[in-house]
Amino acid sequence: MLNDINTDAKNRMQGAIQALEGDFSRIRTGRAAPALVENIQVIYYDVSTPLQQLASISVPEPRSLLIKPFDPSTLKEIERGILASDLGLTPNNDGRVVRLNLPPLTEDRRKDLVKVVKNRAEEARVAVRNIRRDLMRDLRDYENEKMISEDDKERGEKDLQKETDSFTEKIDALCESKEAEILEV
Image (cartoon, rainbow, N blue to C red; front, side, top):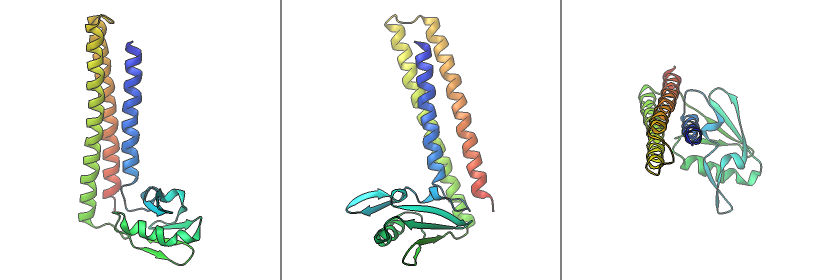
């Protein structure tokens, strides 16, 4: 019973870490990365589709992205999707590919991005604590239903708290790493 709860906690908390890593990959640093644009939604035949399903995305230079659509007729829709996104980038279309040049980040923009990183990290911490709360409630319910003893409940709560602390430390490390990456000039 306790092993199931610990396994469930690890899996769910690992999911929160993976979601945070995905969020962080979409936050722009000084370098170009395909993750920056691959989830931009493009209207393709009246269906909102992620850009990565419509084009190959490469990084020919450190501050530029090259987007080559699988179907050249989608160039205009891809441009519209990029302009509609919150990236603040202007696409350059040469008839076959779309180029995105990433300007250097200003000091103010870097500070704003650090705030976004801290907010996302706090959301991940809250998610981990919510998982802990739900599983603690399950432990109390199991004790009330006489499925586990009070000692088992106490041991389960301690193990759950250790897992929570461990995942919180991972979130803090990810946050610090991303902040350093953003502030690097």
